[in-house]
Image (cartoon, rainbow, N blue to C red; front, top):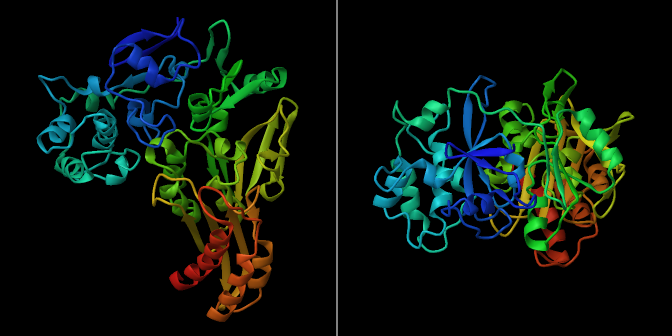
Length: 460
């Protein structure tokens, strides 16, 4: 029988429609604290805690906050989740709940349970001292209270007591992924046990929809009513979750979450470190993957300009074998690529050594938790004051992510000086084919391209 443990109690998944998200599932169980605010992962009102393996690879658990409105309930077969109700009770408030209450952190209360779960994830973060990283709640929006009392509640938190059950739970291994095959009469949800099995399913089922963190597919299901006859989950396949570093390259598993990627890279790719804090929110990064971001083919995916600047390649796997494609040759049109229907993105390969001067500039209407209007990634090598190599990735200025080839040529072989930068900035303004849309005008996009290079010069 398929089931998920919710607040310590097994809850059956059998008979639940397979496009039911985790939020609607727990609300159907009577746990109505978490709410649907935006249905696209931007507000955090639906935040829940999920038991995930300890980040250091030890036999332990990390309480990880996720947007439950995006992920299918079926994805949690054999897994363990905690809602705001599972943290405490009216007679015995959890420390996070207590601080939110006494410091006025809740007014209408709609967003409060989501805030509390995100705050609890930070409260239980292994290695945290008495401080609180406010970025942990950057994916939670409040519509009426204002953030001052919420911030005060966060900063008032100490560390868990020795007998705190959720703190103690961290010393026990998180549930291992369960190979699942669920059917509801109209659709199927399959979590294969191995990559080979996944590749066979992709080969045999033309209508298979492959998902990892569901941070894109979940929006399609919620807001556009999209449905799939077969959803194939690859997010927990060990073959897609590796990260290896040699003197020549970094190989990144396509199903490694962005949060895990940042931790395991340990600063080896500074350009990726610059990207990650600007990629959506912690709630999204805890589920989103490089493979998913690249697989959607979006021209405004934030990881793509960075990987273009790093001269990354993709390993595409099928039941017939693997092939490696430079990312610069991967996209063929708007949301189209050279990847065949029967292939999965298995790895992202970044050559080393990385460039010495790097930066990621994201232009958006909000500083955090927003979609890019324009994204620019720079990777330059300087030798004796001269630009020996330049690689620039752009997003949001064409039907696909692109390299700024003309600007790279205008920089290479020239002194890294204000004169060179000004001339190259004018070239950069003309790169791509920007359009007017709801996020920015074509003229604005062109203008900020040139300004991005001048900003790099000033910062360097």
